[in-house]
Image 1 (tube, rainbow over the protein chains, first blue to last red):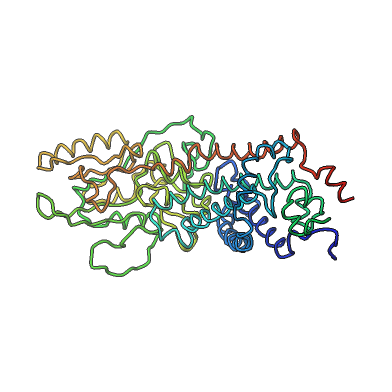
Image 2 (image 1 turned 120 degrees about the vertical axis):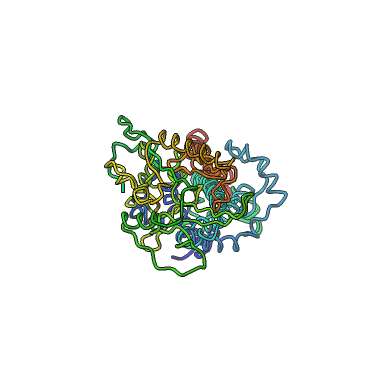
Length: 210
Length: 290
């Protein structure tokens, strides 16, 4: 498919593919993780072929997500460094949530909220990977004493809860901000969209023109 | 292994009540460490009755054999040589599941019905429901369950739940040649232990006592110890075993609350959408690009 010259490229095909790989593995991990989280969610194991299969698959899915999120981390970490403008953006976040973005400081490719989300996701991912290895009974758990495994289990559950809340928020923000899902699906965004939501990025991409 | 479903009072990963109309008497196995001669007949009887055969290991130069509990050895004798004020003492403890009244394994287990507690106090694993996650190993304050490499299921002493269900004593009790292991109602066993402790105290073991730790609400396998003030000399018997605050956090009220919080985030987002509307490109900017 040819790209539309009137639109701006926001995400390359590789970035999109990798994002959706993270997204798919995340959904599978959330569903399979809930199986062990609380008995109320145990029936979700049927999606994965039963309790034993869920137990086998969950950590391997985690490895795939860890690798693909790792790629994401290295490609986006510089773009997500917080600037004073981002901090100002975050201090105005209440107005944004209220639906009034007239006084929002100008966002670059990512706004302060997106950057904060990025770093919180990174923190949760690191905690999930480290604690996940400790409680991976088939290969690693025998290396650790029970007290460490108990602590890691709590860390894993807490980080999983936080990351689920963050991702629910992330998905909602993408639905709420119209056309941003298109950016991740098709890679391109309308110029008007860019100027509205990411004015500093818009200027960077177009030199300020239309 | 368990068949008598009417007498199951607690079931792992189950939030509703189990059948509880019928109550049976609480049982207990009392292991009198002071009478044990370390013959390992109990280990043999356990393997005989349960039809488990451990791999032939190697000689480690000590009497402990096998060196640790395994998926096939649900009980092992642990031998400690300890210097006390009475000189060198040889303390032999038959290790195995303690059948806690408040079982950490059952609490930690995420698979419904993989671990059950009978109304008589026996804690049993239902291997067909086990998913092999090993959470019970992390939840156990006594380091008892063992995961099989062959089938990824966990195994431990059943307190011969199948024998007890039909009015027999556990195999280890039946075989013990010195009467160091006795079995009966928990009340009787506690009473029996009291008699033993009086006798031991008369014989100069001033600190003799019963090991029935309150941290796990008591156990259905109890020890008579000559040195009840220092249980750890018996090859690391924990002084104050308990499920621990981490398991409480991991398995307690935190998760239902977290689930509720997540649902609230999703519902909150939906209500934000229907009250504030979508975040669209403003008319002014749209006009600029027309």
